[in-house]
Length: 471
Image 1 (cartoon, rainbow, N blue to C red):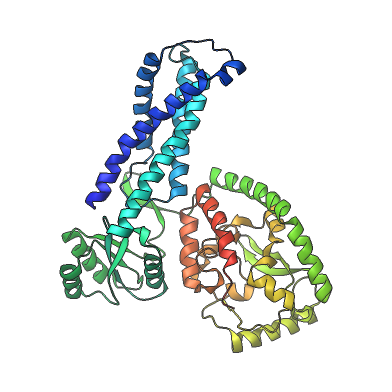
Image 2 (tube, rainbow, N blue to C red):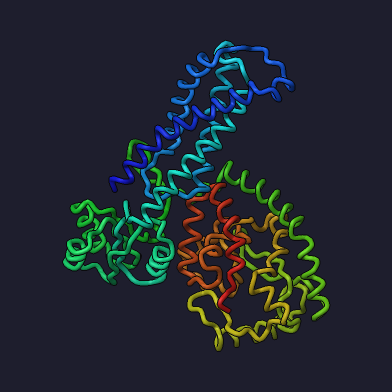
């Protein structure tokens, strides 16, 4: 752990305390202002001295709540949106406890206005204080390299490449690449450590042998180096320790999307789909008219996909020439001919390996369809799939039966929850990802689902759509 990280994490405590005190004073001044006096007569009077005495205790109480909620984790960089969300959540928890206390004993504190206004100011002041401190810390990271983590990357493949690109692109992440080697070589790692220094090691090849990985882990522990590695699909599973009939057991947890998680996600899906239809209603009408003008009907075609409960019809704006489409609205003879042509294209022009296909320079697309598919505008009708309960706003993308038939057993993990309009893969590379990387990301989502994760993915989907596909 860097000394600068310890320093800034320790400094965060008094800054939060001061910000809570300032927020309380601001609420007191606002309450005493002429405008508020005119709106609401003040029934309870107390001196500024009495108020400050109470406020100093309340400020310490909020700092304890923040600590309980994990807001003083020692990290070199923190995401601003995540930080503000956690501050708001912890502050609301503190407010609820105070309100319950006042409900039990009204003499503890009398002004409900100051409590509510103070809570609002606390959220604003504490968030602002943390953003300013975070900005200063990131400034020192980027310009003075104070607190930078020297990172050694081991392995080959897309994961290693992605890590390197992100670190080089964003200096504010607080990392510097000390070296990148393809295989575990402890002697070479020792030389890099002596020459450049190594604070963290990331191993990004899940195919490495267990013996070598354990040796690398022991080396990192002996040298007090943070060790991270890309897990296999089994290792990414959520484990719950427990005792069964007197014997210690490890239970593999599939997903938090059980019980209330499933209920909450469905409620959000319905609301989100309705909002999506309202927001994108006019663009969908324009898209439908454009398709009609270019190639008449059908405007929507039903593309058979495999979901968590079997096959269903995915709604898409038709982006292909009519004679190449296949689905339930076409005859068996038409579908057979279209699928045969598709098989020829996959064999000759697919640029992907594995179960999925991706046809380069697809001749089936219309002029309008090429634009729609480039920016995923053909996906808008899937809001109606969400309303029907066949899909979710966020989840693994559903694939066609001819693709799913080629899945290996471990890849079928993505079929255990509802497919989504967008997901981890769509914000991490869209259709340009290899399927194993897509499975890895979707498995992480399945095992680590939360409402906040869904919100983050939805917010990141819009800029991801603006990045044109490679084909």
